[in-house]
Structures are given as C-alpha cells and as structure tokens.
Length: 597
Image (cartoon, rainbow, N blue to C red; front, side):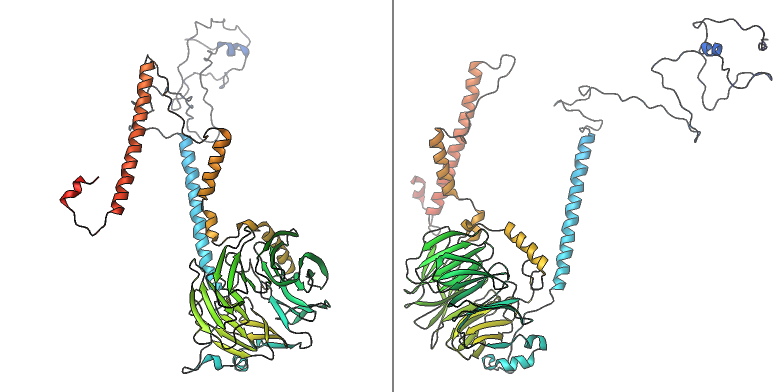
C-alpha cells in the first residue's frame, strides 16, 4: 500500500510526461475518488511540481466554466458550421431544405418583418385619419339658414325689418346702413375671410373696417375719383383703382406703391391662389400684375374698346370680360388670344358673374335679358328672364344664390341647392334702397349681402346665402396676426404659376401627346437617330461550340420571325375591329358574305 510522502522528506521522482496517464473526465454526477489523508490538504497542491504533472489539453478544447449561481452544467457552444450549398441543392441549383422548400434566410425574415411593420403603421394611420374625420364632422355643427313663408306666403314680400325682428341680437347687428351720400356712389369688397370690408367712393373717400365689431382700420381721401377697390391676399393690403393710376395701400392708409403702367383702370379682380391682380382699363388692355414680386406678367389687348365689365371664375381663375358687341370672352395670361368667345346678348353686356363651382355664368345686357349659361363645355343658355329695367350688377353667393341690382331695387333668386342653377321664375328676396346700385357682393361665411349705392353702404340679411362652416387653415375669420403671417408664408410656397391657368384644370394631369411627339421628332432630327428606338437583337455567346456563326444567324432569324408574327397579328386584330364597327348590327347574314374580303 502506497503512503503519502511526509512533508520535508523525499520528494517523489519526476515522471515523464508521456508516461503519465490522462485521467478520465469527471461527470457532474460523479464525486472525487482521490484518497486523502488527515495531514494532507483537501485541495489540489499549488506547487510548481504538481503543475508539471498535470496533463496538457489540446489547444482547440473548450473549457467548462463553473457557474457561481446555478448548479446546472454549461454546455459548450458548437462552432458555426458552414455547409456547402451545393451539397443540398435542387435541380435548379437552389438550396433546398428538408421539406423540399428553399430555406428562409435571416435577411428575408428581416425584410418581411420590416414590410409588415410598415403595413401595420400605414393601417394604423389610416384608421386614425378616419376616426379624426368622423370626429371633425361633429364639429361642423352649423347648418345653412333658410327662409320659408307661412301657408304659401311669398318670401319676396318679407322685408328686412321683419327678418331683423325674427333673428337673434348677434345676427340683427349685421344689418346696418352707412349714410355717406356726400361721397357716393360706392364700390365695396369683402376680404377672403369675410371679416373686413373696404369701400371707395367716386369722390375719393376710401375706408376699411372690421364690419363685425364696427372697428375702423383706416379712412382717407385720395382727392381723386375711385373706380374700384379690392383686398389683396390679406386684409393688410388694399388695391385702389383711381382715376389715373393704380395705387396700393396698407391697412393704416399709407400709400405703398403707385403702379403707373396700369393707368385708367376701371375694374379690378384678384386671383388669390396665383397672387395675380387683374386690371381692365379704358384703353382695352387686360393686365396681370404679380403682387408677390411686383412684376407685370402679361398685358393683353382685347381689341374690343373700353373694358368696364369683368369677373373671375373661382374654379379655374379664368377672367371673363363683357364687351359692347354682346360677347363674353374668356382670358388666360398664358394666351394672347381669348380661350373662348360666347355670344350672349343682342346688345352690349352690362354685367357678368360666375358661381363658386365654375359651372354657371350669369349675364345681363342692354336687351334687358338675364341669362344663365352652362360653362361645362356646351356654353348654352339654361334659363332666360326678361327684366323691366335690366340688371346693371350681378353676384353669386357661396351656396348659389344670384343677386341682381336693377336701379334702386335688389332681387335675389335661389335654386334647389349649391350645385343647381338658380331658378329665375320667382325671386327669393326683394329690397329697395335709397339710391341706384353701383356694387354688389356676398360676404363669405356670413348670410350678408353688401350693397354699395349713391347713398352709402347697406348690409342686408340673406338667410342661406353662404357656407356656415369655414376651414380654419385656409380662411379663418378669427385668426391672429401671427397666424396670418404663417398663412402668408405657406400661401407663397404653394403659389400656382400663371402659366397653368386654363379652362379645364384637370387637363394639367394629362399627357400632352402632340407636344411629346413634336419634341421627339425634333430630337431625332437634331441627333440623327432615335435614342428611344428598340436596339437590334444581339444573341449572347454560348459555350461548348454553340456560338458558331450559323447558330447566331439562326437565333436572330427566329427573333425576327416572332416580331413579324406579332405585327401581323396586331394588324389583323385592328382590321377585324374596323370591320365590326363598319358592319351594321341589324343586317341579316347572307351566304355571299364569305366572298367579301
């Protein structure tokens, strides 16, 4: 029996490393069987001699580390084995899994997870948008007003005093009269938000105010005849057509610009989405002024004498001019000639108005006729009414009501709805003023009609004239100064070029085939060849002797034959279509039809 060596005595002789036997690896369920003596230390010896007796492990061996927390064994990680894709490949050379399908790589999984997350986000946004739209409908609580008589009573007999007594105090305050007989007659204009009113008299009186609160913004006398007045893109700028030139003022009454190239102006129209101020003059010129840069975009000669009848189409920004020969011409700054000419009356045209949808146009002439035309391509009169004195001024409301000023009487006609033309059989309302009418306009987003006459300004209540709900991001009557400035910046960024004004705005999204073909021909003439032509077929070279000259020619001929067959097939189909169209549908088949080619 071997005994352990005593400390301090003979040390066992060194053994050769090759002669030492490797110990069997101990499992975690096995206990140590090494015998120990009472005097010996239970732990392994820590001297250098014992370290030399330990067997050496190979370099690639994985060492098991003992965990201090759990007693579970730690399984060594196997190194990643890269398999040869050619070992498991199908007939087409694609790697195939055990189930016969191609394996799903981590890249494919990542791509599909990203696509799925994007789809989920898009669906969530769409659902949120629909919920917000449904909630916003609850905020549009206002409904259009209306006026109905009791037991078949004619609403035209209801006067303004009766309406003021029937409505609430806030609505009754919107009816007022400004007695300005010493400076009349007056022309007036409302801002796009419907909050501010500007008016100018023939004797030089110009004023602007917040007509809801009756707060005066500015009041000046230009010491010159005022022929027309218009707000620009906001209530901060005001264009006044004076007797000689066109002047621009701010809301404090300070003159900012004097545009001498626009002289002897009679009528003004402002195009808000294009930032264009259109002017009609006594000399017969229609001028477009870009107020954002201060340049004249176009000056067109109408060749029809004095221009004192003008209106704009809010749908497509086309200017309508009325002439003394009974025609109405449609103009765009992109064309030197009129887009269309409509013969409306036997005499001269006195007034023109276009509704907010751009569908109907109302005209009145010296023949005492009031006509409504359809502008959807036909330009035919839909209804006609003969007036005793003729209408000198016309205007449409946001909901399709038509007002006509005849001397000192104002007549209003209503239709079935916003998209239907007004019925000229029976007037909706009638009102008599203290002097002849010189200007008419419905206030946006308010059931109010502003009338300028020789005695001053009159604000009438017209139930159901305007839209009850407004877009706070576009035309907000209650916006602050900071909101107005932000809206101006946004409107300038979204400014529409003047070259895009045309009769049908939907045509801008279509392809101009004629111009495209003409440009292609010019490109071919300039280069000497067609860069977009189909390149001739060039067969790819093949290996193992299959790229001989005979095989290349054979493949080229095969492709040419296929293209020829396609062309013949298309020509035959076109010929069959033509024959089917030319052949009458009700004709009986005959036995001689087989000889017809």
